[in-house]
Image 1 (tube, rainbow, N blue to C red):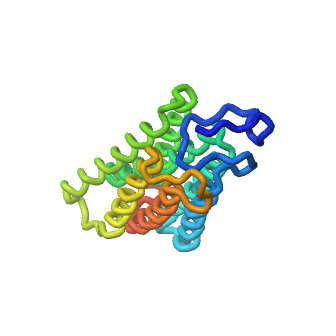
Image 2 (spheres, one colour):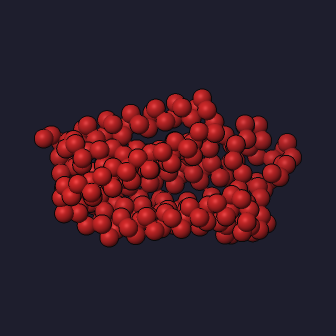
Length: 231
C-alpha cells in the first residue's frame, strides 16, 4: 500500500479496503489503468441497449443498463480509492449477479417480468445492506450469487427442460475464468508493475468481464418468455 500525502485528492474520505497492483497516484484519478478500463462495461452496455431494442428481448436491456452503471461506479471507485467508491462498485456488481440469479430462477419457475425484476432488486438491496455492515463481504457475496446462478443453470441443463443454445454462455464462462485468473495474478502481485498506468492485470479483468457481459446478453436473448409482463 502506498501512502499518499494528506493534501492529495480524496484523502478526506475513508480509504478502500482493497488494494491492487497499480500504485495510487496523488491525483483525482488515482489508478488510471484500473479506471479507464471500465469503459469496457459501458461500451458493452451501450451495445446491448442498441442491439436488443425489440419487445421480446427487453429483459436483456436490464443487463445493458446494469453494465453501464457498473462501469461508472467501478470507475469512480478506482479513480478515488475510497470505501464509498468501493461500496458503490460492489453494489453495482450485485446488479449483474442479481440479474443472473433472478433470470435463471425466472426460467426455472416460470416467473413473469415483474417478479423477475422484484427478486433482482431484493437481492441487490439485501447485498448492499450486508456490505454496508461487513466491509469485507463484497467479493464473497458476489461469488456466492454467481455460483448460485451457475448451479441453477447446471440443474436446468441436467433436467433438459428445453433446447438451449449454450455456445455464448460457454464463451462467457471461458472469459470469466481467464479474467478471474488474471484478477488473482494482479491481487497477489505475481504479475505486477505498480508504476505502469496504461495497463494492469485488474484493467485486463475489466475488459474481459465487459466482453463476457456481451456474451451473456446473447445467451439470455433466446429466453423471450422472460420479457412477458404476465403469465
